Image 1: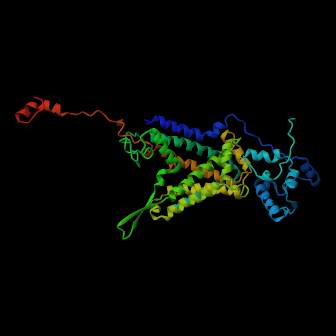
Image 2: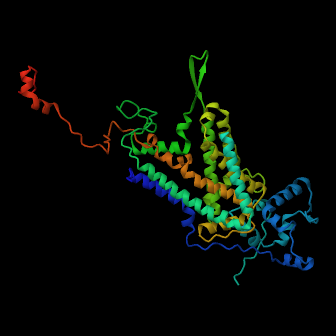
Image 3: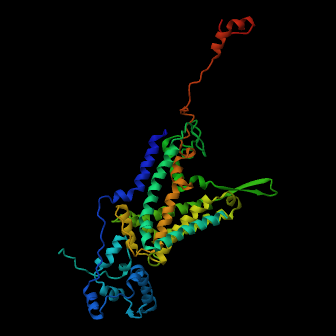
Length: 141
Length: 331
């Protein structure tokens, strides 16, 4: 098979391959990140000791997918309706609050929130208004 | 009817993936084997198609000229519409590829009055919807690179930020999601709504529309409605590109439906009208400089023709011509 106009044709093919195969060679030789999400803060361990189990306001699978929706709804309820009471699907009442609710247990923002958010390049706008919790830099031990 | 067949085909494909991925043993097939196979077919298929096109010679300049070609110095030359240099061709191709310049010229023709007169009017809707569709598809593709790069570059995060800058809801609403759904829907309605277009539309026209609509809808469902374990999806994506994939239990069948429809698109791409992605660059009516009057383009497969000139003819028959009283050039 004779190929005409070899120069531009092969240049085009090279550009196509460079774009299509970008993820492969960009990641070549790098070890894939292992996510390390920690739910062992003092508050959570204390809760576990008192209640006999770890639990969030809603079941884990729901929280994993829908936490942003939940928190967004909380924000609307608190800010617009001055309503801080949340009745969960498990029948428990919780105080709707980010800093005095979520972050009381999950005081480890870096190892809880940021671990996934950074991995997924998600930038939640919680901290546009809320004061970001101060965390001690983890020492390598 | 053709539209219905295409719709049923896409729904069936989606159903196969959804039902298939609900069986734990099939998740590896839908998550790893089919995507790999589809990607290989896509890349190899595209290269084969390009080489096949490139094996056709283009001996002469056949550009569609939509402006004054370069001629006398006092006649204004349209450097982009009828380019005479490589640079002009690049500008013309850039306008064509990025902004669909030739589609912008689309006109509608109508009979007016008692039907003896013809009027031409603007017809920009196809151009606008086509542009909206292609650009939002590109932005969505670029946005998805966040699943394939561990430290997502600032440029991609910026595109994502612009796309979601309305800050509606959580997770943030992407404008391109709405644009692609609206434009694909318009492109479909246009096909069934205009009788002439409907007449020439084939299954090969409806099927990719529904397929892309299916990919967009499953993506939208996963982002805003029935969420999947997105972190495990990135782990799978990173695993795929480093040839060490792990399919987590927590990934929902909806994701596999999305991925399977995309795999179908990848396979379908090189063997359908969708190859216009590569083909647009290889249109001789667009990518050739209009320089026929400046350069001589010789047909490469010309073979030497044996010619018998008048001089030779006269040499052969001079005496007989003289005898018959015919004038000759040489005595």
